[in-house]
Length: 490
Image (cartoon, rainbow, N blue to C red; front, side):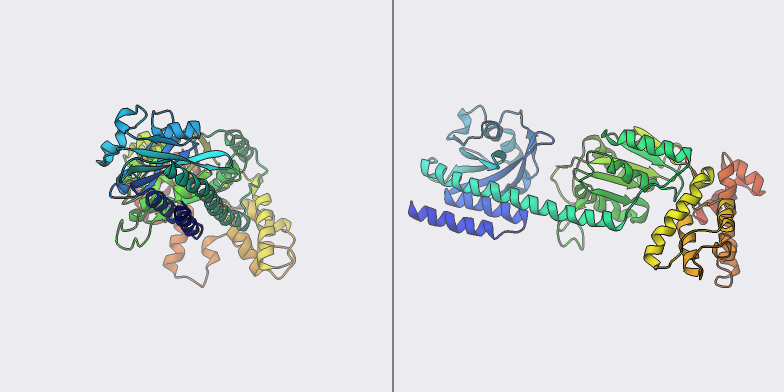
């Protein structure tokens, strides 16, 4: 027996040296198999959120087939019995035990004759089960039960400790980003106030939110406000801008990939949806997602399950979804470029943010906010705007919304030599802005974009806008595409 304990101590030392969770799982399973002289072993963890038991890792030829297989806790199974009763279970002949879950053998083609199932505990709670399968010679003994039990006590504690460490590292990373990039709504208008109030109302539910509005109106600001007021506020907020990711990379960025899934995939990588686990996933510009990826997004939204690119394992995450678009999604549905079922799936709680030109009361409060932030970065002692500067800001239509206002304020702060911003540094005419620095063709393009955006913002459709502009509607459609003009969502 002393020899057995020496072996156990060596395996425990090996387990203690692991700093990667998957490597830790492998060592625990190999220790259990080796110490009991068995054919195979598998590790199952309890998913408390979905009340399911999940095969995390296994040894032997079937390890890839069984990995990721999950079944409800209520399902009759040996692992389920161990989790519920918090006791070791020895089944010498699986054919005679009704608790044996035959489906796993059917999936893997493996023949399970006997099982020694040991609960993995941490802080008094069962976190999983280690199953040691098919003793090579004879039956499992009391000595096997004792050795496996001692290994399980240590393994359960190590698994939980390493999970906590990794989770803390991820949270620190996300919190650091939150501190570096603060997003807080600033407003005075009734229109934006209504949006904020609705955001606070929906924050405590788990409903999918769709935020619509022109580019630069503050869709991510509202998404973060929802997250900040939700029960998930201490968990990560992960934004993904679908328009900024090349189409062929979008799926792997969202769902991750396995090592070897494609050329250059040198290691397994978590996707954005996994990084957002227990927190909020903000899918910005969802209208830019290609049709083939929309199918996978829809499937993910249905039950929060997905597969990494190149992998067979079905994974699940508990995550809140907020979507956003500056396009008219209804129109995209009618044009057959956006799935109708996906549109209705994400439109559970729609929020529309009015453009800045429709909430003039917000212009000066936003300008002061951006000035205050820019002063800290640029380190200039500037305290506000003159009345003429304010008049100039209020007279402009702001086709680029708050984002354009932020850029204008920052540019004015760089140009000024005074302790207050005056109208002379508030250059809001797009052609004038770049005078002497760009070609006539580029200046005309900038003017066209701003002028067309302004006309489109005042009309109900492109046909009416084309009449005012005195051009064919087909030519206007081409200009909208060429100049990358963002259409107002209806």
